[in-house]
Amino acid sequence: MTISIAILLGLLEGITEFLPISSTAHLIIAAKALNLPDSDFLSSFLISIQLGAILSVAALYAQKLLKEPKLILKIAAAFIPTAIIGLAAYKLVKNYLMESLPLVAAALLIGGIILIILEKYFARKNQELSEQRLTDLSYRQAGLIGVFQALAIIPGVSRSAATIMGGISLGVSRKNIVEFSFLLALPTMAAATILDLYKTPPTLQGQEPLFWCIGIITAFVTAIIGIKFFLKFIQKHDFQIFGWYRIALGLILLAWILL
Image 1 (cartoon, rainbow, N blue to C red):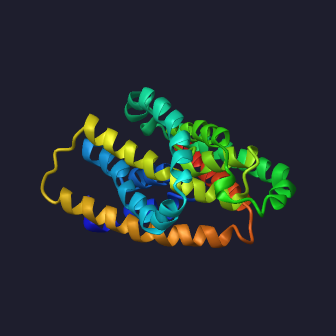
Image 2: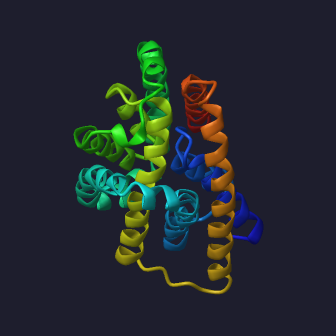
């Protein structure tokens, strides 16, 4: 790895983490395209640079959480099923699924199709929910969103896409499910990073600590930009464009695998 590659991967993480297009898929594809050799450091790097994105959410939403403590309980309700499923599937994901490009391509395609269908089906209903507040989210809805989020253990599904699709199908407005997805990222991504570092503590050599810091800082800055862009985008647009993007990327990845 080099400094420029650490910056590139940090950029990809920050820009794609909170969009429903799978940051994991983009990072895996980038690592393969750059011919980065598989190693414990690379695997941990791709997961741990999420810390930058976590810190961006904390920086932007700390005041909101302090003013509305009930949200913390609803985030906890959503996190519990994700944590249980994620912990049970950790070895499978880390040792097998993360290396499967065909699985990533399939997840991108299927997720894109589902996102488009849900948007078309719930579009009118979503307009009627425009006055809904984030605090109106019920504990039942929060728990079920957490179950949907657990689908993101499959590389290519996208944590953001899973929560958004779950929220739309449960009658949550676009703005609220996007913001709840941001907030739910705090415990989810923090836990995933801590678990990975605990299970496979990296042995840092040479410039690897520098690469790590650069990746995290780059992800932090670009994630703030990505969050603000996404919130503005959904004020006038729906999620269908992300569905079509996922389909296009999945088809390109399949062609790359087959050629």
